[in-house]
Length: 176
Image (cartoon, rainbow, N blue to C red; front, side, top):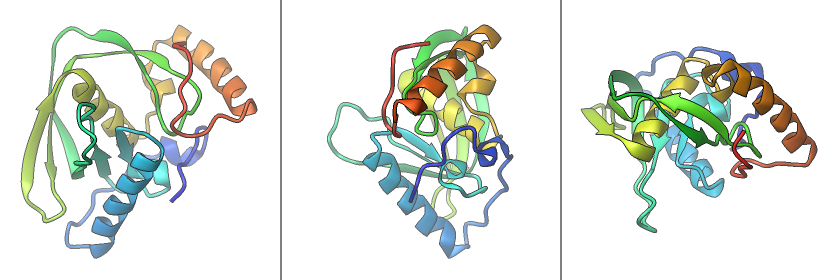
């Protein structure tokens, strides 16, 4: 499973809801987790692997060597809290760069698991940021669309240079 790189138009599309009964969704989610781990990511959305479905997988547990992916089908942002904090973010679809992005620190998301059971996940720090980042992908937004307009110019320049230098998914660079 290959990671779709920006500026592929696929990354600018709004994804369609899924039917949990569709067996291909479970297979897709498992393949996405493998691709995420292979590329040292902590989150991956279906459009990043060329599928326009509302599927996300995250694993932000940096304290453990265990892999505990959270599979989210049709995730919906329920709540954001806190004053936005500016931090550097990387993205498997935009290798070689890190972009400063302002986001509220806390996010709460409702989703279905692979068995169709409804769950809610909430978190701050890396998890809160990752949830927001991956849900942006489902709505056709990359880091370039959500960062400050001045940061966007610098990030696009840095991204072109990183691609020209051969950057691969999972590689980040200095904060832009």
